Image 1 (cartoon, rainbow, N blue to C red):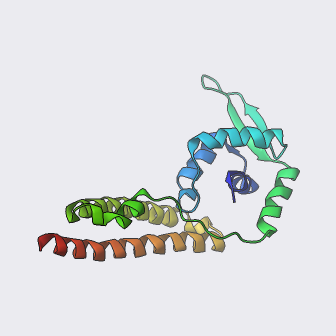
Image 2: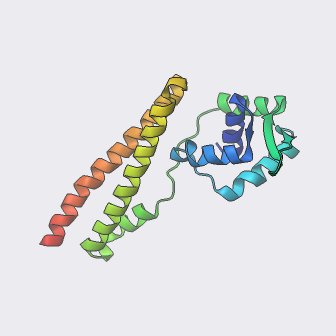
Image 3: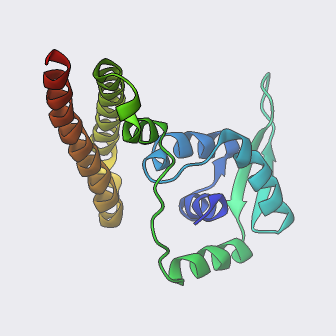
Length: 176
């Protein structure tokens, strides 16, 4: 799975602008796919050159022109080949928090507590956003999309539960 596969999948459903693709990558897909802002537009340019997508320019009064992206038959075939291919193993995103936590023996308990609280707050915000997106869009989601979102929600809940237990443990150790 790469940015091209994800973008083609988005365009299978509807035509989108580059900005709309960026928003989807940052919101919906950020829970299971990591893509940097700097890769989106070069990927779209390459995909257009490879005739996987086309760009329709819509003129707008008093605003920059809008580029509507559409998937081509070649793009559909490419995306279908991805979907029909073998599943690849999941890869864990790089986590600065997990790396620091692993080497936490080299800092004091107070620092570990700060990290845990910071990640707890961030994870709670992400869980809240995911739950909000789910409640807003669940009626229009395909059952497979619902399962995907539910897995993300349960992963955040498990992470938060583990952090809460870890916080209690670290706070007890810090008091000793």
